[in-house]
Image 1: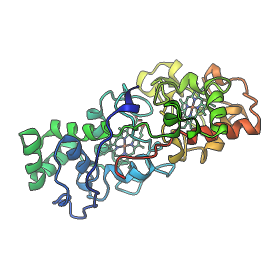
Image 2: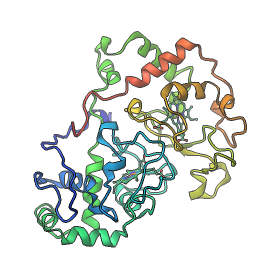
Image 3: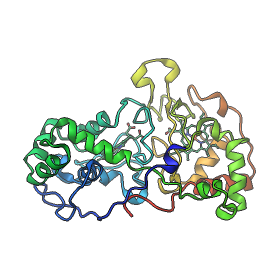
Image 4: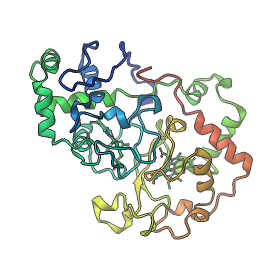
Length: 318
Ligand code: HEC
Ligand code: HEC
């Protein structure tokens, strides 16, 4: 049951954004690597002009996602893909929509260096953190050495790994036997999700992803031209495939899909009901989605209500 029962971390102190990149948050003294990673995650010291942090795009109040179709990096330019939630990453075998990295350590270097995101050579980021007297003290206390390219990434990865759902979503409470935790509509929505609507065929496991790459029809080689997993494998059977995202807290993270194409969960469900009614010329779409589901209006509503039952009652950082 992995993430459901995983440790509920207690973040004792809130966080203030620091304007002066030389000093990090003076009120928070990290006690362990998770808290140290937390400091870095919220610290603009890792971006070129010290204007944004990881949390500028992965916002705690939206389950560590963003509510823009595309977030803005240090130069005000848009990211290439929609910012996903970084909760429930602990058990993921790879990261990014195309799965191009396999560890959270490798992952963290990418946004720091990406010109559309933080745009700071990782070496420089390490230098900055090393020069900062507070970080020196904290790293020495926690790791017994100065900040370096390994322990900085370990700290960030430890923080991201700690952002697990804690079994407080209505579905979890219902599963533990409290029958009124979900409405009747949500219970019907769950049935549909598991069976007739076929959602669970791709969104399985406690986090509602099987960590596979699938193509739901959002690639046509024209106006929708992100080839997804194909960019990594160059295998034509991977054209238009994206990592199946987990669905915990999905109600908090509109818009949806790698390209932020759908603004609401209602639209997402409309789409799955009949993908070709939206996109007539998909390439390599999954066979599961080739026939319309023909859901009734009530069934669509039930499915949307069920997706709302995946929202945690409590979040890290609240
Ligand atoms: C400018 C916005 C932005 C910033 C800043 C940013 N990210 Fe992201 N993050 C994204 C986007 C967009 C993606 C998806 C990119 C893709 O899949 O190709 C992403 C993906 C991720 C993922 C993978 C999620 C998954 O489901 O595979 C993790 C983990 C992550 N970011 C952590 C971080 C960390 C740690 C930092 C700071 C060092 C950071 N991000 C900074 C926008 C941002
Ligand atoms: C064939 C596998 C497959 C099936 C079946 C499927 N999904 Fe998905 N789902 C995916 C993939 C892959 C993505 C990511 C696609 C992208 O970003 O372009 C996704 C994305 C989503 C998202 C957006 C998540 C986000 O954070 O942007 C939601 C919501 C969702 N699916 C719900 C459902 C529901 C509800 C059903 C059943 C009606 C369903 N899915 C059926 C594979 C599937």
